[in-house]
Image 1 (cartoon, one colour):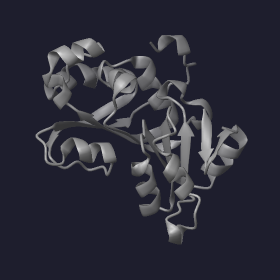
Image 2 (cartoon, helix red, strand yellow):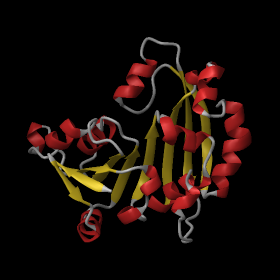
Image 3 (cartoon, one colour):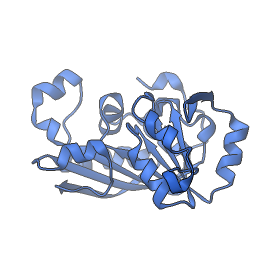
Amino acid sequence: MKILNGKNLEAADPETLRGLRASFDRCMMDLGTGDGRFPYYWARDNPQDLAVGLDPVTNGFAKLAIKARRKPAKGGAPNLLFVMGAVEDLPGPFDDWADRITINFPWGSLLRAVIQPIPAVLERLVAVARPGAEITLLLNTSIFRNADYTERLGMPTLSEERARRELEPAYRACGIELETIEPLAGSVPHRTSWGQRLVVGSSRQTLMLVGKVSKRSRAPLCLDTVP
């Protein structure tokens, strides 16, 4: 994993990161952050929090990484950190960091990991979380109307019923207690570019999962258990 500091992609130095985390009481981590708008606005609205956006591709949040280094009066956010990395790389130097984790409209391997679900990935979410941390997932369920499309992606279908029947116990087994499983139509609670494109002026639906980390496993995470 690397840090995008302005225009510079730098090694994720554990000692420097520990010092940064220690200077904030609370931390929000947005996984699969895309263009980084959600952690950017969170950092601007909550200057007392450290906001972290993680994505394996830096192109999406490159402009905001530069903007964040400006003075706050000019749109800067000194409490914002952009990380190039995948969820499968966690926790790395981010062990026990997050008081809040968000995953907003994931796609590809991240979507598959949270709806299949893949225990090794869920365990990585737990590894970056502090006990009692809140985890919120916003999932686009409209794509599952097309059975051929989801079959090509190798993904199971997703519905409120399946989430309650299969995801809830699977998440609990990994240390995440799902407290809310709620379908949303129209507006969503998180301000993201992708979310706006999905729901504004459309009939697309979102399934919101909200849970808390109920336990943390200190067992070593095995990379080869992640498909």
